[in-house]
Image (cartoon, rainbow, N blue to C red; front, side, top):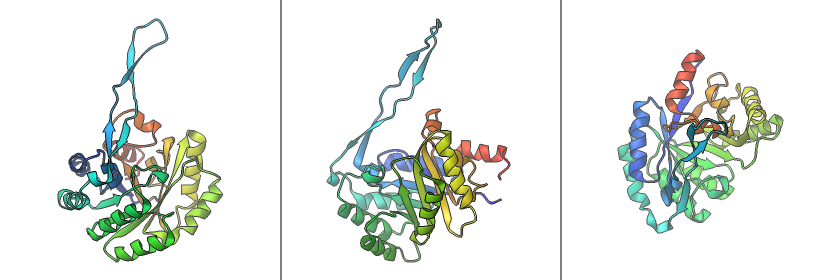
Length: 268
C-alpha cells in the first residue's frame, strides 16, 4: 500500500509567515506545500479565546476556540512579482500555488479577470503545481492549461458550499472531470458522520480510477478520507502545521498527527 503525498497548506497572510510555516512543514516530512496567494490580500485578526465555566458546581474553566476573521486589503497592497520570487527561492519543497476566489471559499477580493492574470503569473514563475478551479470559464481555463506546458502540474479543484449529495452523483461528477488536471480535487462541507460516510463511499468507489484523486470534507467528519487516504488510494492529502482540538471540527488534521495515525493503522 503506497502512501499519498502529504501537502501542508501554509498558514499566515504574509510571505514571511508562509515561509516560516514552509520550513516547519519541511522538517515535519511533508512532500508538498500549498501557498494560498489569495490570503496575501487579507489581514488575519485572531480574537481572544473565550473562557467557558462548567455548568455543574465546579469552578473549572476551559478556553473555547474562536475562529479568526479576515479583513480584505486593496488589490494594489500586494507586490505579487516579489512574492512569487520569495516563494520560489525560499521554499525547498515543491509548491502548489492557489488563488482561491470567494465563490469557492477563498479570500481573493478582486475580479475574475484580475485573478486569471495572477494565475497566469503564477504559472510563468515556474511553479511545480497550480490549482485551477474546474468552474473557471472554459476559454480562460484552456489558456491557463496551455501555459503550464510540461513543467507545471494541475490540481483541478472544486469546492462545494453544501454537503455531499448522493455518492452516485459525486462519482459521476468526478468521472466527468477526469481530463481537467493531473489531480482531481473535490471538497465538500461536512456536518458529521452521515456526510463523512458519503465521502468515504465516494472515495471507495473511485479508488481504482485511473485518475489521481483528492477527496475530502471541511467540517466535522471531513478528516475521515484524509486519515484513511492510503486505503482509499488518494493521491494527495492536505494537512496543516496548526495544532488544536478545533481541527477535528473543521475536518482538518495536523501533519504529524496524520503520520502517527498512518503508523497506528499500519498503512505505511
